[in-house]
Each structure stands twice: as structure tokens, then as C-alpha cells.
Image 1 (cartoon, rainbow, N blue to C red):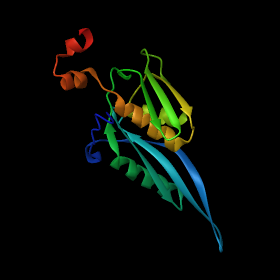
Image 2 (image 1 turned 180 degrees about the vertical axis):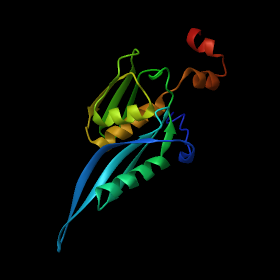
Image 3 (image 1 turned 60 degrees about the horizontal axis):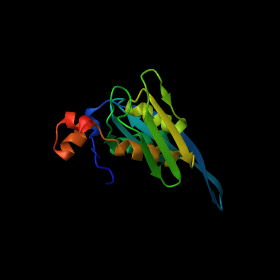
Image 4 (image 1 turned 90 degrees about the vertical axis):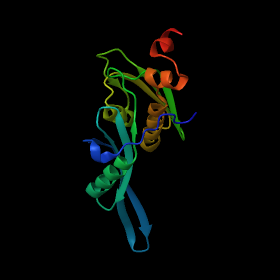
Length: 172
């Protein structure tokens, strides 16, 4: 049951905030010497349940970031956010990175590490507890976090899938 609710979204309709997760200077050694370029991982979101990530590579930092933002706007997904937190606990995995996200009471804040924090804040989650295990590679952590967010389902979706009322989801 992989990615039940992958709702792709058109970027033209929404105003986004972008967050730079990490930037790497990459060196290519040629016979003429070393050539430097930059790769940037960027997360964009409207802070209301829509998020996307992208990778940009270029000779200059600013153009790498710009390319990353463009790429991120092409990979947007919708995530259920309930009262500033998530509906239930969830784990996500990508390559060597595993993440665990858990709903938190109002006023807790985003308790998460670097790459995870950028994704969770871009989605618009205000209160969440999160833990990253395994690889700390920002590429993998961002993808694992988005994997966990995609697995989240709210009560309306479950009721719809089962063909029952929302009251029965909680009581039945």
C-alpha cells in the first residue's frame, strides 16, 4: 500500500516559501585542474499542507538554489495537517535514513533535526516530535520525511476508503 494519497498539485496556484536544506561544493578534477560546482537541496511549501523538494546543480550557488526551487515546484504533494500537527504516528524510510514522526500537544513546537525541520515547517506543521535514525545524509533524510508524510491519512480519507461514516472510524 505505497503512497495511497499522492495528490500532485500544480505550483501556479499557490504562493510558496522556500527553505535551503543544504549546499555542497562539488569538485571535479580534470587535467586542466579542479572545477568547482555547487549542489543545493531545497524544500518549498505553502505552510498549509503542500510540500516539495528539489535538487539544483550549477557553477554558482545562487543559480543552484534557483534550479532547486524550480525542481521542488515540480514535485509537490499534499499532506494531511490537523490543528497544526499530524493525524497519527508514522515512520518513513529512504535508503539508509529512517525517520519517526509523532503528533504533539499544542505549544510543543517542531522538535526535529535540521533536514527534517525544514520539511515539517514547510508543510505547516506547528507541533510535532520527530526522530531521525540511521543515515544523516540530508538527501535521504528529506526523502524519508516526505515518505512518512505521504503515508499519513486523516479520518475523512479512511472513512471514504472503507465506505463508512466518520463516527464509525473512531467508535467502530
